[in-house]
Image 1 (tube, rainbow, N blue to C red):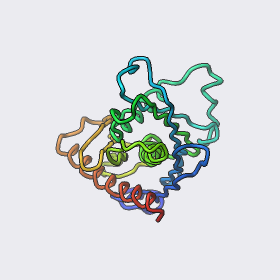
Image 2 (cartoon, helix red, strand yellow; image 1 turned 135 degrees about the vertical axis):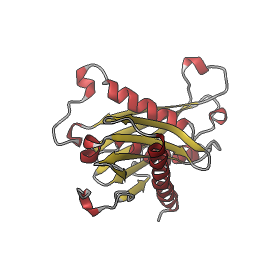
Image 3 (tube, rainbow, N blue to C red; image 1 turned 90 degrees about the vertical axis):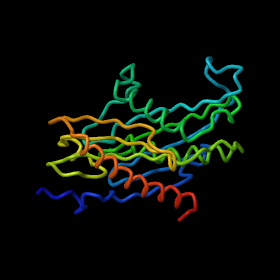
Length: 235
């Protein structure tokens, strides 16, 4: 059976590090590292909302995602120079926004918008799940800096997949590329699933295998919640 890089066992996360308040010019920020994936997450608040929320006394949260040109082994051109975002970028930033809106009571934002930016500094698989997990810290601090009592709870995300018929947690790029099935799972602590994205690239996935994958994802996400709490405590 092929060994995982770094000698990890199948149910083990890559090393996780969350550096809170990484950027002093943003209301909230965090640099999250999961293995060789590193994402800089910032959150800022503006006293405005989209047109569809005007005069509703409700706030909003929106997210942007980008991968820096040097984040991968082959330079990726900035999408701003291409004149448009890729479908992948749009899909990921919508996922981040949907996920983080679950962490916030929008009714308590009083027509303010939280703008989250997630910039991938280095990519080795799991960039979207790392972005969600790190950005939740940034959102918490942004709300605190504006004295908004609107934080509902912690949101974290992880990937899980089947590689060489083996169930594995937290796939790096190499594993993700060869996975027969992979899921991205987002959870709101003490409330349940926010979103599940999945694809069976090989054979169809039996339902009992899906339950095993979700159970393993939940296991990993509980560990990520502990890292979020430790970042908040400064440990």
